[in-house]
Length: 288
Length: 285
Image 1 (cartoon, one colour):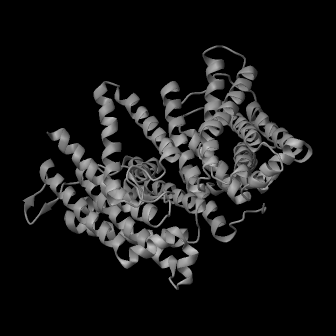
Image 2 (image 1 turned 180 degrees about the horizontal axis):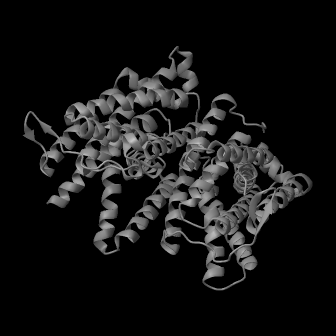
Image 3 (image 1 turned 90 degrees about the vertical axis):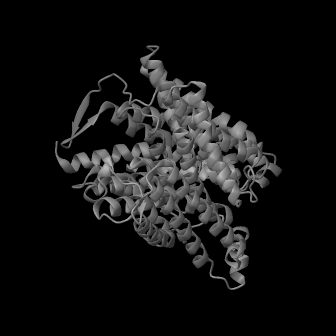
């Protein structure tokens, strides 16, 4: 039961990451490989607020969201000048820069060893530290973010995003400043990723830069690409699939180091096969 | 050993390795404008195959290196034949190419780790080192610098003086039209993948000999090659070499006095500065 709860919590966290990146990649067509950086900023901001300043989890998460959003505005402003492949390349560069800062800014981030002893959340004296209560909290976050995403993509704002994806020049002709829209969705996605980061930090009680490296961004991107671009349910399916697959491998009896590499082989192959035969992913509504 | 000559030598050596990666990368980029992210993984597999033949089978280093280079070339050819050619036929978008190559990179890196473990491996032989202007350079590092001169001259002659080179340049101008005038584009692109990947394999072997091998090294080789290619002018074979040396000098002098862990920040910082202020690179294609 504890094990199932653990899986459910991890899937919830990655569902949030998938949903957040789907807004950027699936709906707006910006293939970003820096989502793990915002995940990291959320996790670190929350962890530092909780451990060094003794701030309550729910306030700390808010700080994480704000800092992540501000960083996204800066990074997004630079990236908004690039398109296509160059956007992807630049975004991947920012992920590497952010992880390098986390590793090297030792006094503030704890360097490569990271931050230990991050407490679980509590609210008005109620302790929410059991795995069950934590799962309910994570699930609540998924539901809220899912409906925010749904609201965004159905709003007029979301329609402009889809128009940017299909033909940016055309929508510019109608007088929309597409830079603002791209920047806004980039920041919104980053703020959602910060929520996932905060949950992760508090759940595992320990974070280090290695968790948030480029591979993690690639993993989040694969969730979106495999689950289905421009489909919010697809992001959740993708997260569940990619988390459960390696667990199944461990049950078959591979040692964990081999299972880890096999997981990489399988999800890499899945990306290639999907791109070859089903570029919209499992339930996606948009082909890259 | 004094500091400035050593920094210059280190920059020249790093620049040569980056040049080799960028050469192959640009060559492949020329055929179907996409960032081939599997390029670094192919390079490192070349290194590992050479390593396997010398260390486990006791084959001489020269023969092993040739086997490694050919193996990387064949791997590149196969990737094109069974993956990228299919995408070309479907007229997939650049982004699909990029993400597919990302998937291939993940697979190749994991397979390398499965076959050769994630441990850091070094070729056993000790190499003689020489003193030049107060800096130290090893035999391998001299070979690295010589290889770049040989390979880039060879590639220059191949592209400018032969019929094959003409066909490659035609395809990089316009694949459709090349097909119409009777060029077997799939065959030529297959060869381009072979040559580009073989050069990548050489860079994997040389950096393996120089510092050692690790499956994740492919990614950093790739990044250095891509950054070099972009700041030099992507698709421009010679721009890549200029970009590689610029990157190497900025990196090596940039970490003067600060921790070398900032190297990646410096190189990606340079990339972003170039993308912002001179997106076409040093030399325009």
